[in-house]
Image (cartoon, rainbow, N blue to C red; front, side, top):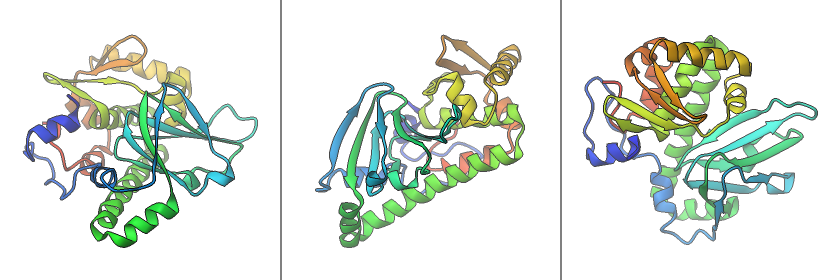
Length: 254
């Protein structure tokens, strides 16, 4: 059971000190969309499967039904790319991925995605004001997440960026385990470093420090447990904003 599932099981229960629930849960747009005739093409993506994006694909949108999907944009001759993460309920507009030499959608985990043309969506939105409202809320939420990430890169030092990343991952895909939260990280160490604009070796040292301070424990490359939410939250000035984006669900930061 993920934190999303736990929030649903609480039937809107609110943890002490958290913001009030939103009127609509993340994924409300997608939940409504899949009940309509969207002329969408369902895609079942294997782990690490890639979809290259050409200019001709800019009118395509991808709605994430399950799993974690990333986009990667990189300039010619550069091994470093801009990596953006998308979670269930999110919508990816191909036209929003920068027109660098590499423009790719990557299944960070095995994922189910709906692909459809923007013209089809526009037609649906024009005929359904509730769907339009849900779509606007979803895009606002994604824009807020992107702004928080940009603020972190611009203002935070490395360990704070890592704390913000772990908090966001736990809120999006974490599984509560007592007072801890476990996460199957969807990115490799190199990808996390690129996502946080850090050197991979620097990231490794920071993670070792987090383990030594009993903030996290790790089993294998991808399975990580956050052991001290409060300490992680106190490390990062972006925590209130991250919680606000997820204010429709009960916060683990009790």
